[in-house]
Amino acid sequence: MHITVDKACLAKLRQLVVRTCGGMLSFMRVEAVDHAERMKVWLCVTEPALRLTMDAVMRLLPAAEFGRISQGKSL
Image (cartoon, helix red, strand yellow):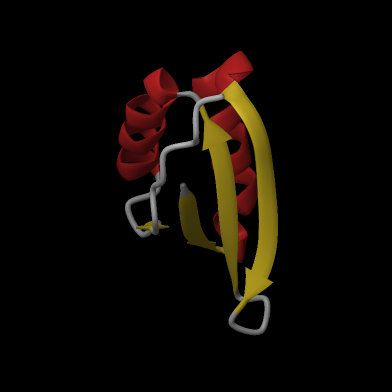
């Protein structure tokens, strides 16, 4: 899943994701966009953490924009 936030909200998003997902977070990748005014964050979380993360972000960072959510492939 990816989420785009203003650069001022990046630290809050990171804290929120780590607190919400804990060990269900596999990785977090961050890339600056729009001349570094906004940050695109890719998250790889387990299925149970997906809804928890989305709910928490929508409550605490209402200006966050959600992008594509894709399901990982099973081995």
